[in-house]
Image (cartoon, rainbow, N blue to C red; front, side, top):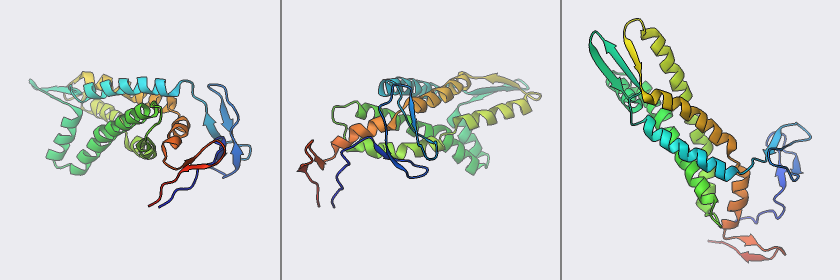
Length: 224
């Protein structure tokens, strides 16, 4: 197996919407470049992307652990108290015959957010190395999928609807996890907004074993 050599001009890019091949100009932090044909944003230069994303990711790790360790909701009905965590709620749905719903809650509110945070942490830490290893690029390709399946905000809206419906029949006691999850929703949004995948790709490309020097001479080539 052999690999194509990367283009020497890293500013050359094709628009994802209309395929127009063009060069990205030098941009000031916070500025963006748009396609002259379809006016879609090609790239936004995010200031200090790796450090800001790392800070937000570490905050997300702490919030995620807290949110899944403490009760999310408590109920008091005719003198009986009960509370549950996010994982406990998914287990109760499974035990009560709502297996599909329970699996979806576990996947979208527990597993997918954990993968989203974990992959982002690994990507940012790997990208900060002098020569980022190739697995950083592999994780970067799969990270958008975890972001799509991470739906904590959808679960929170469903919880609020359920609280309104049962408020007349039981005393609802919001747990700490309920507030932590709302904060986590905004932290995850900020994490995605501050992350610059283009910056990571530009650093990862030199981790390949097949590359060329400044004069275009092949230094190494991987074949099998």
